[in-house]
Image (tube, rainbow, N blue to C red; front, side):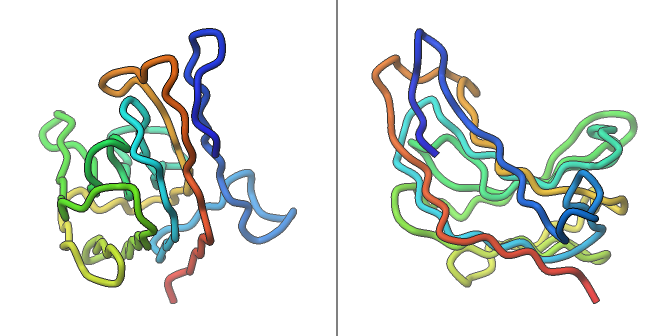
Length: 169
């Protein structure tokens, strides 16, 4: 993904992998599973990853959200799980304090008992809050201006070597 600005507009991407071929629903949906991606992101201020599992229902935050890897590309990688408690949006964030810039493998294991996150084969923790129970689909949302926009001359790449998605047996 080539991240840059054109005519003052930050150009980003949000690809979503096709799983299961043409007969699959419009989403690559499932409830629970393992998601793993090998990637490298140039450290670019103003650009951000929020590669996420998003509810098919589009009922956010009621039906949850799982983000990993997430974070401003000039800072550090983190994981976040979103949900609702008492009608209020809350999140659970796990921070391994590892910067972008090198090749990494980010893995999410979503099960009924929790969501475990791994970075480069090492667990960064388990969230047992807000575990989604409805189908979700994977989006590699690469965005800008959250919280600040990139300077007009900022440009670089996010590389994806591979992405693998497993179903839960």
